[in-house]
Image 1 (cartoon, rainbow, N blue to C red):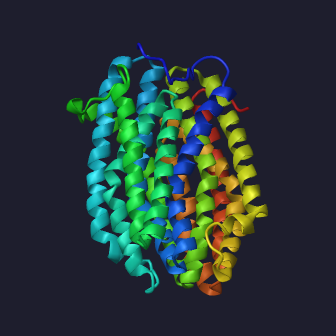
Image 2: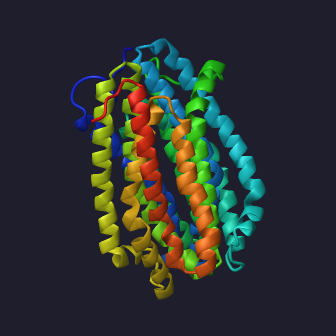
Image 3: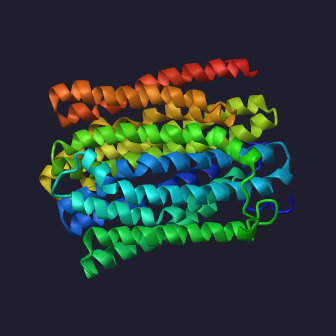
Length: 450
C-alpha cells in the first residue's frame, strides 16, 4: 500500500493517544452533523414561532426511524475494510470500498422513496399536534430529498475511518455546517421561508459535505481510491457488510421505534412539550456523540487488532475507550445540567417551552454518560464479529422496556418528568446485561478477565 497519509497504525505502539486522535475528530464530526438539525431548530425557534420549532424538532425520531437502519450498515463497511487492513489483505480493499458505495447509493434511493411516501401518515400516527403537522410534513419531505448525499457522506466517512482518518470527515462537516447556518439565517430571516428555508439549507449543506468526502476518496491512492466507473456489488463483500452492519442498523432502527413511541407520548402533551423536548433533545444528541465516537474507536481498533490476533491489545482498547468515553461524556452531561437554562435559551425564550426543556435536561441528558457502559462493550463485540448479541440485548433493554414504560407507567401518571425517567432506568439495565455478555464472549475468545 503506497499511501499512508491520514492513517493511524492501530496495531503497534501506544494506544490512548491514537484513540483520542481518532475519536475526538469523530465526535466533533457527529456534533457538527447534529448541528445541522440543531441550527434548524434554533433559527426557527428564535426567529419564527414555537410551532415552527416543534415542527422541525419533532421530526427527529421519525426521520431516524429508517435512516438509522442504513447508516448502521456503514459500520459494517468500516469493520470489513478495517479487517482487511489488520490482515494485510490490501488487494481486497478496492472491491470492498466500491461495494460499500454501491450499498450507500441503493440505500439512498430506498430511503428517498420511503420518506416521500410515508411523511404524513407516519407523523399523523405519532399524534403530531394539528397546529404543526403541515409544517412537519414539509420539512420531512424536503429533508429526504438530500438522502443520497447523507448516505454517501456516512459510507464514505466509514471507509476513511477504517484506516484511522477521522479528520477529513470532520472538516467536511465543519464546512457543511457553516453553509447550513448561513443559509438558515438568509432563508428564515431574509426570505421568511420558515420551515421550508431550514429544510432547504440542510439539504444543501449535506450536498457540500458529501461532495467533499467523495472528492477525498477519488484522490486517494490504491487500494482506497474510488472511481464511479468501477462501482460494483460483489456478494462476498456485501454479505460481510450486511452481517456486521445490519444488526447495528436494526439496533438504530429499533431505538428509533422506541423514540417514536416516546415522541408520540410527548406530542400528546401538546406543542409546547414537543418544542421543549426538541430543544433539550439537541443536547441529548450532542452529548451522546462522545459516546458514539469512542464506541466507533472501539469497533475500528478492535477489528484491526482482533483480525491480527492481538488479543491483549483488544483488552486495552476496551479499557481505554470506556474510560475516555466516561470522562468526556460525563463532563458534557455536567455542563448540560449546571448551565441548562443559559444554553437552552439559545433555542427559545418561551417560559413554558423552557420548563419542559429543563425537565428533559435534568431527567435524561444529565445521566447520558451511562450509555458508555453498554455501547463500548457492544462496539468491541462488533469489532470481534459478534454483532447480533449486543443488538438483542440493547433491543430488550433500551427499546422494549421503553415501549412498555410508555404504555404502563406514563399511561398511569401522564407526567413529562415520569416519561423522561425511562432513559436512565433503561440505560442501567442494558449496561449490566451488555457487560455480562462482553466478559462471557471475551473468555471464549482467548481473553482473560482483567
